Image (cartoon, rainbow, N blue to C red; front, side, top):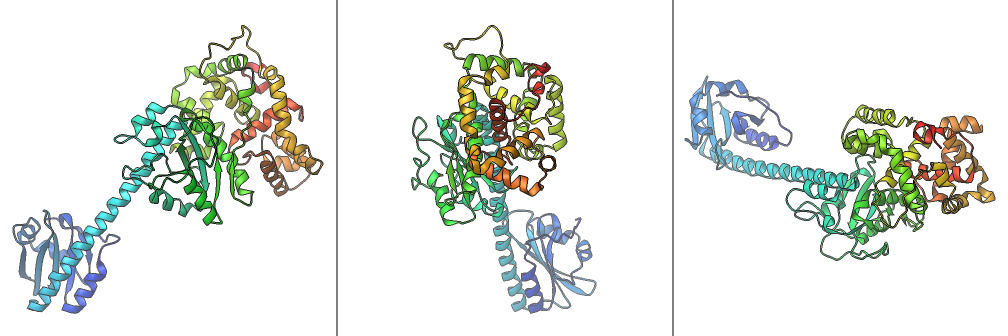
Length: 497
């Protein structure tokens, strides 16, 4: 039989070393197919090739043990395990082993067999955990696109309880990357999920654990309404308790959303996490103010959005899904999130840029596209008037509700103590959110720009340095209030404003 010598991590070499010293022999443990899993330093794998059919018969279960003399040394073979091919303990000594030494070798072989089973079980458990983690990630990824039924199809076998819920609240836990496994294992149920919730390792931001949790109540509810039911499943109180008990943790909590709007809830949780990390409690819920898209005149806004994104209809659906993420998150983060290369993300974006006639390096173009994609997917409402003439984005943003929203949004920066912040965020937007160019324009250091942006994040309750949706709110608010006067031709395909 052919023999390969492999030193595998985790093999019980220490037991063999102890046994070899006690019985005065070189010892090896053969796993499946004649592979040497572990051996003492003086053992030669070439010796096994001289044993011929003797080793085959022991491995195949036809002999329980055998002894033979090869080249002046005594070779003893003993099989272990109940299935063929069987593992074999090989001892090589100058003379035949005494009865006591042979018994000790048999006992050590039995111990190694048990260790092997334990290692195999541990490998199997780790493999199960990894597969369960990948499945949870797949379910969340599909759910974030707004399609609940495909998420159910992805979860082959038992469907997670979350997918039977009508509403969801997303919580994002910030913690050291090495700590994310602990709660995910603790609250995992036998199916690999977390009761009515999911704990998903964010591949884009290594410190984030994304936790969508089913809402048991209708309406918006209260962020503290979902408590630990004591059944081992994930509840909101579990995460709040982790934050209280661990000083390095923080938690951002979204409002309650329909399950199909999990992506919007995740964006809110990211914004809330920024506030949480700057607060003494290290916990924050997203405020209940309506989003800009909810305030724009519905019929006119949807008509503009659908006309805006209509050129994307010729592209494959997966291209649009990637672009939807790429206008909100850095491309490197999108690549990690979707487990594709950054070049692939860039290729998808180029196709969309060509179709729309936009430059995605322009933050205003990304803000407009993000708003259009959100509005275009709203369900039709028979009660809403559809205009004959499609308005421009500028006309929509001049509506009274949009003006009120923008003034309220920027109000925290209007305080005399923060007048420099408003100038910084305006210059930052004009510089396409490039901190170095902003610093050069304002005559300050890059670090000072980042400090200003961090302070603006806290005051505006928006994530400005991680996710794009907070930046897009800032872009729209600045345009509505006229706080900066950069050209806006890029915000509508073909230059319409």
